[in-house]
Image (cartoon, rainbow, N blue to C red; front, side, top):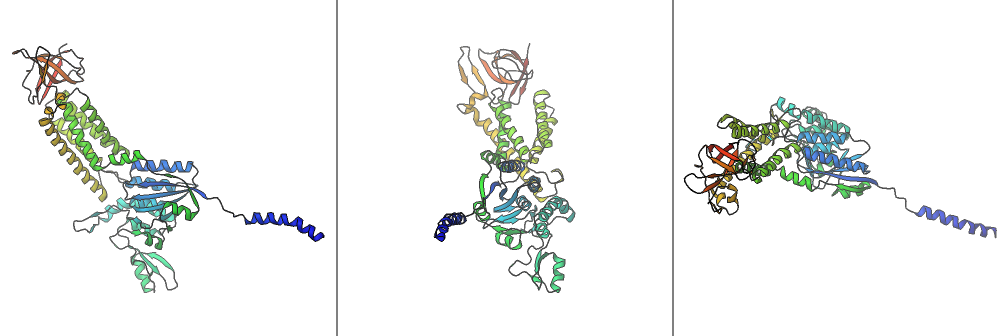
Length: 504
């Protein structure tokens, strides 16, 4: 009987214990965030990445997956991102090479605590190189290449030591002269060695690691590896098809994915070389229109807008510096002085145009680590300089052709012809649009009246002494702003312009 009572008392306790033990124990997943960097790496994308990375940390992410898909860009911008990542505390960083992590992208990947690659990704090639016409790599002088590569090599070495990669593999991504072999001893020890140690190890009975390329990286090439090889040689800690698959394999919960926004896509479009060439063409046409039909405001507004884009976009991306902006603005000031203050000097307008063109060309050239675009060393800088000359020249040629077309056909178009402001009117007040490409009247000294405010461009009315008609013509005031109705006198006639001043 006592046994029966004891059994009844123990059964609920045993059931409780069983139920507690039977419940699965699942540890909470670590919060993670995905921060992407793709496209060209420049100052604008650098600042965007750092802002989004800091937002992920502020939102509580303990792991940040840096999704990389880029061919690279500005070395200094990539260098800044690398140092920023290595300065982080309290967060684990995983570089996810999604398709490609090339050049500055490889620098960023190496800075992360570990690298995971997608199923068909590429990693490496972090030294700017150029090619000869026969397709072979052009090797620069040792001193020149060493000067250009030193900051990048130092960053790669630091990343390799921090994140337990072999420094020789890191150097092979940057220095085209580094040769890497992967050797195995008779008792199974493996290590990466250069050419001299490789020859000695062969004599000691070492052999290349079976199934791996021999050498891993040869002379005159830069180490660039696919997913399988990167995992095999230890540069990548694993592979995953997507960031979600990576998070699931690591027990992570992705709380947010911070990609670049619409504004950054628009910025990338405006920063494209061909778009900037179009902006140069539009700017030239707008200036031409403003000088030949001033006072309407539309041409002036377009010129100011395109100039703002031509200066602001390179400045934000890191391709433009303050000295280039100052050179362009100084050139514009000299051209304006030649036109409005001291005409016919010639030398100032030529100098100003040269300053503008040189400044625009150098806005296509990024700054090298430790040097300036005025003394380029890297082949990539020379390539950017050539692109700058090509696209600025293309924009200039397009601008000249468009200006010629406008001078021939624009006045005959129904709406735009009215912008020229060359019309005759009878005493009855009716207007008949006419076009005049060569101003032969009124003569110097003719007196007229401003019919629109002169700011300093506008229109003025002059009476023909030999007939009853009056003409309304586009003029430029050398006296600055004049209100409508002000009496004016012609000071200069030529080049399709009438320059007047106030008679008061």
